[in-house]
Length: 198
Image 1: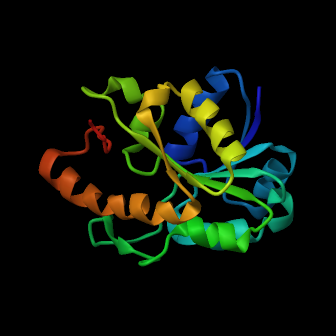
Image 2: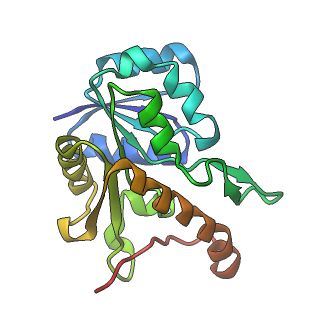
């Protein structure tokens, strides 16, 4: 059992909270208030950032002390929204939210994952017609192993998980969000994910 704090109680955070609780972990979900986030992060071993990416850097930088020594799993994408509410561009072109988080939180082990799919796939990868891929980006091998274990608890088979390397590789997976509005406009709001097939 891992003590997990989820920052963000929207569709992504709620879905992850239900699945991880069902897998036997002790999960606390923080709402938008700063006090709730401080309390949740302070007692957790792993913190999941499921806050809207545009404000994530500011919110998490304010939790620097609470996140010291912790694993921070970042599942957000920092984008500017278009008039229809869908992603219209990256807020950190040439870099990534994950890299900015790691730079701002040097004593926290940041791992980027699960940001290349519709939120429903995060907790039900086997529901798709072919195996999706979950990517890992992070500088700490031990932290990535912990995250692999959590992904397994969410239904991800190990062969569906690809470790891309250091945190700098997150700029590639974060750029994948630019597919999202086009896929949704083309095929509707149905579960999908990026899949690497060989």
